[in-house]
Length: 277
Image (cartoon, rainbow, N blue to C red; front, side, top):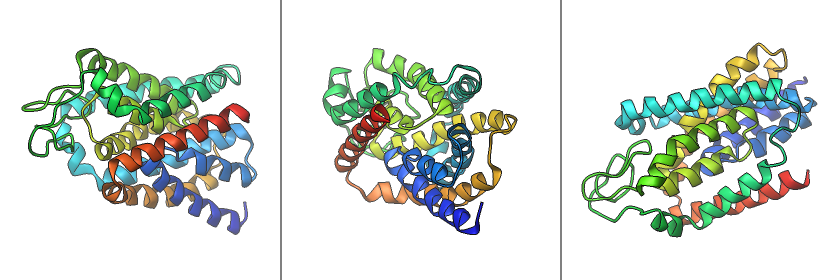
């Protein structure tokens, strides 16, 4: 790898970290950059997972006070993410090539549509009513919700059935995140915004944390696979940490509806790209 390639991967890592926090589409930037640097597809995939761990660390470092509000609930959901990331990594290394690739475009497209229709879907799921004050969920609805739990106080939860599906959905999103991950952020945002009372800003923070946990566990598995290009992973990590750290304040100033629609449309574009490639 040349010095120019290293520098370009640092830049790609920065934009992947920033774009990943804002839209959940980090791999749409970083994975093609790794391929352009000359890595074969499997090596690019596992190197991408290792490198993007830094994006989750950066975002979490800049939002630790918000995450700390969830306490034990955050730890419990993080465990689902860790187990899912482990399963996804093992599937990538042991399962036949293309195991998930047939369904992935449809899964991402479904999540993108769910994001675009999120207000309506949340109402159908028994979504929260508006209350007063800003709660731990980062929303202006009662006391808000935690890491995916129901709203408390003056707000109501996002519906019993939807609420119970949240940890199960998180587990499967983490499996996909550990396996390949392109669009995993979009899928998680759709899950969190439909099944819980979290705001777009807070859902983005939880996305970076939970998928970061899944990526970290998968990265540990990949480290022993012999497929990781460590120099490329280092370059990607440097940029991704800075990009991830820059994400929370950027998302905070973007109107939630604009951000949600933008992510949904980008998700549809990603689904089309995955379907055609």
